[in-house]
Length: 192
Ligand code: B4P
Image 1 (tube, rainbow, N blue to C red):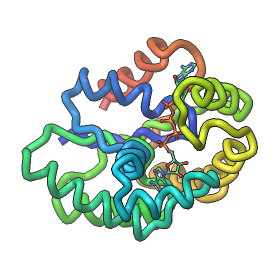
Image 2 (image 1 turned 120 degrees about the vertical axis):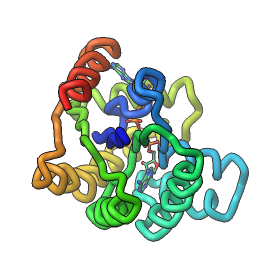
Image 3 (image 1 turned 135 degrees about the vertical axis):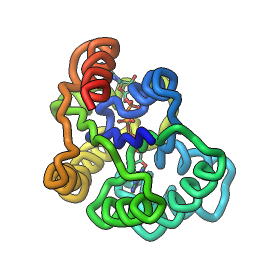
Image 4 (image 1 turned 45 degrees about the vertical axis):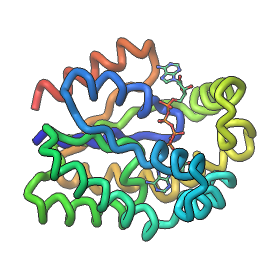
């Protein structure tokens, strides 16, 4: 199974690049951000809990995220998918450890972690741009966007080191056109 983690700061293009990768490699997309936004739209208990954190630019607590992703993986494995693309997950070391355990138990390990590298100024510019048109609450205020970057630097960036130690991390330049970045990601996957 081709199991990929698409990693990077908020606004680095994980959602954008996932769209092309899913089509090219026939993968199952699991985006924790998309799942939370759908739960919020449906006003479920999970959505209401996640919203409290997302609106402030904070990460949703690990126990909420890990429980949710576990049941989504189980549902997909039953459908015999060709592989997963994890977009926006794992975002903390406990999430990475939980995912490793889960995938080892199912004997479907992570093959590659692709890290999109983008400067903070470019991230803020992209997210404010999206906030102006998408109505996404967490993209509308520069202070909240910068808080998301702070969360990323303190809690998420160490996850890159976790996978580097396993020799699974590939860093990819995340600035340039969407097509150029897509070509770099495909090159890394095809070199496996
Ligand atoms: P996510 O939904 O994961 O979103 P994101 O990090 O903001 O964006 P992404 O990197 O996918 O950027 P995109 O392609 O859309 O997270 C939202 C929130 O959910 C988090 O802050 C957190 O609160 C919560 N959450 C989610 N997962 C969690 C977890 N595991 N644990 C705890 N909390 C969790 O691109 C952004 C913009 O850039 C778009 O407008 C796009 O058009 C543009 N863009 C993309 N590529 C570009 C390029 N090459 N050039 C110019 N613009 C580009």
